[in-house]
Image (cartoon, rainbow, N blue to C red; front, side):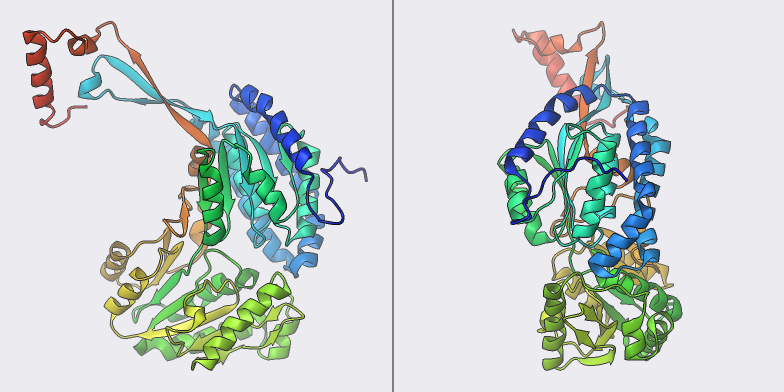
Length: 490
C-alpha cells in the first residue's frame, strides 16, 4: 500500500526539522488568506475527506492504540472515533447556520444604522494535543478549525508514537502541507512551533504546561484556547441512587485507565451511605475487570498507564497516601515495568497526602466521608477551580445550591464525563482548568474572529456629536446622555 509523503523526523533525536516547520508555516500564509473566502461547501468537503481517510485506517488505529498503551478496541471506538465522527457529523449539519452573519439591533446611541457580526477565520492555527486521547484531542479541534476556514499545524504527543504515525499518514493523505500539516517530536519541536506567530493556539494538557503555552502566545499577542484539567470532585449524598452512582463514577474513573482530564478525581460520600457505596463500587470493579487481582491484571477491558514514568508517579501517590494512613478498599496492586496499576479504591486519605493535592490522572479513587455539606463546599472552593463537578443526588434544591456555591468548567448531575460528548454544550475550564470553550458551535467560534460590521443609514445621527459644539448641540448631547437612564426599547 502506497503511503503519502511524511515530514521527516530525525531518527537520532526524534524531532522534526525546524527549517521544515518554518517552511510549512510560511507556506500556509497564502492558503489561509485564500481560505478566508472559502465556501461552506468547500469546508464541508474537507471534513468529509478527513472522515473518509480516518475510517479507512480504523484497523491501523486499533493496532496503534494497542501498541502504545494496550487500549481496548471498544474504548478506541467510544473515546477516540466516536467523539471525532460526531463532531464532524454535527458540524456538517449546522455549519451553514453557524457561519451565517448575525444581524443585531441598534442601540440608542447607534440609531439609524444597521449592524451584523461576521465570522472570519483566524488564519494559521496551531493545535497541540496530549497523549491520553491522541486521536480525539487532535482531530476534534481540527474539525472546528477547518469548519471555521483555517489552515492548521498539528503537534501530537511524543508519548503515543504509533498513533501519531497513523495520524500523520491520514493528514498527509488528505491535505497538502500548505493546508494542514502534522509534526512529530517532543519539547524541542514544541518550542520551535511556539516561537511562531500563529493566529490562534489550541492547547490541551496540564495547567503547568498551559501557562508555558500562554506565555509563548503572549509574545505575539496570539489568542489561545486552553483545555486543561484539575482535581474534579464528586459529591454523593444520602438521596443518591447508589448503584447508579457507582456504575457511572467507576466508568468515568477507570476508562482509559483513569487518564481523562474530566475523570472523577475524588468522591465525597455522605457518611450514612458510605458503606453501601463502597460495596457497590467493589461489585462494579469485579463485574467489569474480574473478581481477583490476577483476573483484573489479565483483563482485556482495562488499558495501561501510558509509560513507566507515569506509572511510577501514580504508584508514588498511592504509597504516600498509605504511609500517611490511607487504607486500600480494593485494588492497590502495582507493576511499574508493566505500566499496570489495578483499579483502586482508597479511604481515610488525609488532606496532607500528595494524592489530595496533585491531579491523580490514573485508576485510583479516594473516597472521603462527610457529614456536613458546607464543609465539602468549603474544601472545593479552597482549591483551584476544577474542569468538572459531579453531583449524585435526587434532591433538586440541594443540587441547585451546590451548583450556585461552587465553580467549575462544567457540571454533570447523576452522571459523569458524558457532558464532554454533548455537541451543543460548551466544553472548557475556568481559570486553572482552562480558558475558552470547544465543541460544536463553541469550537467554531473559538477558531473564528467575530467581526463587527456597522453600516450607516441616510440619517447621520452622529453629526450632533461633531464640533463645533454649539449651544443646541450641547443640549442635544446632554438630553441624549440623560435619556440613557431610561429602559432600552431595542
